Image (cartoon, rainbow, N blue to C red; front, side, top):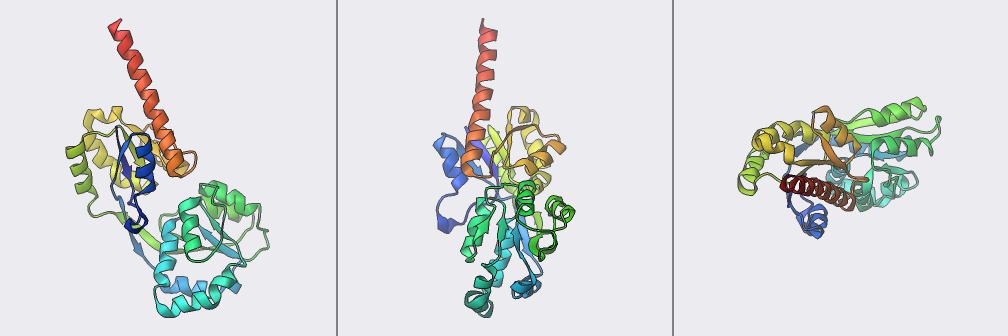
Length: 276
């Protein structure tokens, strides 16, 4: 059975995409289609703030893209040197709060120690931060996207924990999205399952998918990488067959396998009923 993953492939240098690999273990043939493009902004302002760790109580990351912004900053020799010589060590005396393993691994790549990676979403990360920070603590620096949800900032504000947000990337539809989806559906047919990885993915893909699937859309099992994406899918009228327990390849693959197995059981029962 085929599964369509609406996400960017992992860096080619680091081997096969873990989601494709994990679904393959269940005998599912997964294909990736990039949905989003990112434009990085305010990078000078970002590095200026990173140059003053004494002004902050720690860092908050809810997206791998925010780490990519930092890595772009560090490509400049002078900034890379400043980071390696002192800034990295000074930030390492403060917490770097993260959502999920993908973001945590990127935090480690820039030499910091992540905290909260098992939280899995903004709501739980906010709870985690609130359990560790005091209302009179120093401000946390939050590099984020222009489309960030207000869940985390609102939760921290209610507890009196200061947070400084800085928009470091903007999200747009991938230039080849429509062409890639059309090509997939014409060559591969209707997949058994389609997975959304972000609310932006729902926004940019849904109309194309509805048009390409036609009446067969009712046969597709739609899956979400997490509760935030599931909410966006439900708001758009998409029935969510499964939501990964945590945003990992293992949990997503297990959830999809279960949803497809249940569908097969129902189909088998219906067939048996008709034949009898």
